[in-house]
Length: 200
Ligand SMILES: C[S@@+](CC[C@H](N)C(=O)[O-])C[C@H]1O[C@@H](n2cnc3c(N)ncnc32)[C@H](O)[C@@H]1O
Image (cartoon, rainbow, N blue to C red):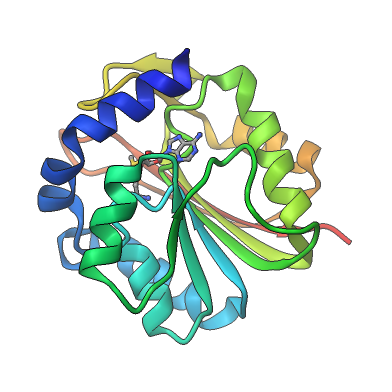
């Protein structure tokens, strides 16, 4: 099963991933700024969905957000709980978040849907919409591309999404688009971030 392949691939490399990419200071300054500004606006409770090593979860926590990090890879959850013992983390999937309908002020999904097969992305966005209260916020980070297309990500197959196609999926799931950011650094994949608001 595909989810099992993603879980296994990250499980085997969770320590290496956390070492290389598990600190906010190693992240692009634009991303740090975007997430910090967003963190000041969103309120609580919030979930970092697909938190990986948990560094962004900790950043939200440090901004006073009541946040929980969830990830389907138990190795990440164990590691994040050791590094950031004050922050709650648990094993869960994007497809079935452990929260009641409309219970969340916001969800951070930072590069966590990049491995989701494109035909399954609507179900994940619908799940986010189920959990976020009206006017609540979703911040989605992903790889920007000219078409929805698979590529060989260092860990396991991932997908590029054009921002226009992601807008379409978000609107269909019950969100309004608030902000769209794209960034292209020479020799690197292009990045996209969308802030969307749960429609009333
Ligand atoms: C590229 S990493 C990003 C991790 C973290 N958000 C960051 O910015 O470093 C993708 C993460 O999403 C998680 N993930 C992917 N699909 C998932 C799913 N269906 N349910 C829960 N977690 C998932 C992976 O385990 C991994 O931790």
